[in-house]
Amino acid sequence: MSEISATEPNEAEYQLSDPHQVAIHRRLQLVGPEVADFFHDCCAIMPGATSLRSRTHLAAHLLREIDGRLRDVLEPLFGDEGRARIE
Image 1: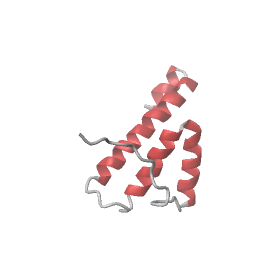
Image 2: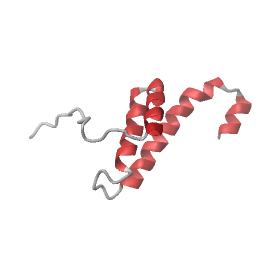
Image 3: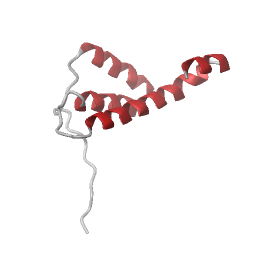
Image 4: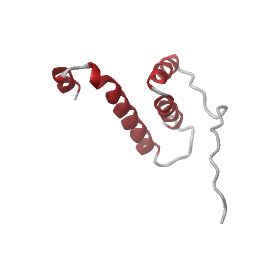
């Protein structure tokens, strides 16, 4: 049986170039490295940097993950009234 090993992503494959995306990525790092990675990967797959046929589905999943993490972080800052407004 072959062994599966995880490898680190190759940072040279895709670099954020849009200043707006760079700023969002930097701010998402404050929430957590996974959230920033989700955003980075979403930016990489959407303009067609990959040949994935399901890239819109994958991007939507990544965006849902980002949304969920942001809600987890921000919801405690709001009372019940604020929570109802953001849903």
